Structure formats: structure tokens, C-alpha cells
Length: 179
Image (cartoon, rainbow, N blue to C red):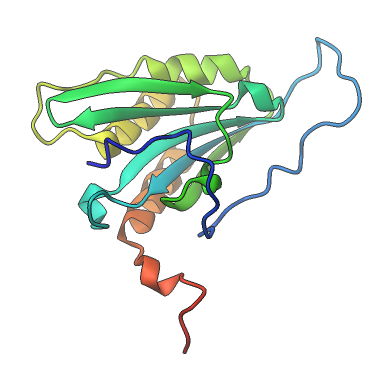
């Protein structure tokens, strides 16, 4: 299920709904200053073919402190998934297989590491044949909600946005497409 997707690719690709991270703080910051963190669901094209059930999904925690950003996902094959966290992850839209982003929530008063730790505690379910990276994202969102880091509305909007993105036909967003 897209388990071979490498999160460190840096080749450009067309953005489905790429969001600019131009809100990085400027100037000096004190240790007491709170930072803005954003939680996104990232969807990548499927491998070897781009069917919705083969699309790879991940969570991206974007911090206004760029080095603190990370991509968190389950990689592997059914029955043999592993958790991976890529610290200082690049903009997911730079991936050659990028389909789109779904913004789940904005955290203005939350330490980015608390979010990352909660997500990394999501159980990998290799004992279930149907468990995959898409289930990991859903389970991680449920865990964030259960631990009080995600509101019900944000959970539902994120989940529904992911489902819509999984069904998006890339041919409809191709710049070469003409009416």
C-alpha cells in the first residue's frame, strides 16, 4: 500500500492543495514564546498504480520552527508495517508522488513534541490483514482526539478530507487538462 514511498524525495510536483508555510516567525524569539503548529494529512499517489486503496497517507506536523516539522507514517506491507518519523521533513508537496494536503488543525498553544509523541504512540496493527497506512492515519487522529489534542469537528473534517483526497482523480487536477 504505497509502503515503498520515500518521504525524503525532493523533486517538484504539481500541488493539489499545497499550502504555503509563509507564516514562519521573523526576528528573535524568546523561550517563553509559543509557536504555531499545524497538523496535516498528506496523500501520495499509489504504487504501482494510482488506485484509492493504494494511495499512501501520512501525518505532517508543520512547525513555525522548521526543524521541528516531521512526517509521521506507517510504512511497509500488510502484516509487516513499521512506524517512521522523519524529523525536519521537507514540504510534502516537493514529493514526486504528492497528491494533496488536508489541514486538520492549527495549534497555537501546543508544544509540537506533544503532538508528535501522541501520534508516535499509535499502535501498529500487523495482526489485522486490512490494516494499512490509511488506517494508521485514522487511528492516530482518534488517539489525538481521545488524548484531548483534537476536537471532534477537526477529526471529522480531517477524516472526510482524507477520504475525498483518496478518491480524487489526478487527471482532473493535471495542468495539461483542457475543457
